[in-house]
Length: 141
Image (tube, rainbow, N blue to C red; front, side, top):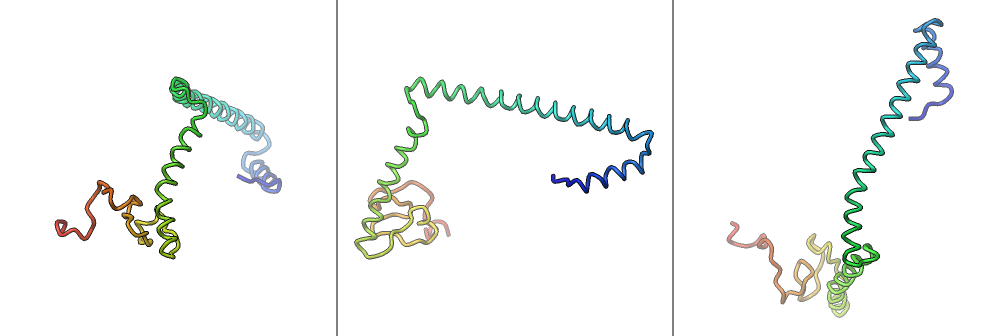
């Protein structure tokens, strides 16, 4: 919320006109108390959330330490990169041999051209992938 000094002056003049000079100081004090209470509640809520999030984080760190993994992020990323490169390497190689631009294995289900011998999932066609039957299956009609 962006309140400029001009807006504050207008609010102060309106408050003076509505409340009058006698009740304005008491109203300002009660508004200050309400703002202080709101800040205190906000701080308490933030600390409770931090404590609640700290418990699962500590449990995860304890589990990671038990397995002897020092850097969880790199321990997860390196196998994912290896799998990704293993899946995309045949697609890129086959597309390069056919003189086509390489197919994006992620977008392959969206009508993107596939390399020869590659199923719609990006896996080699010789390895069937379990899943729902293709939409042109007569059993679905």
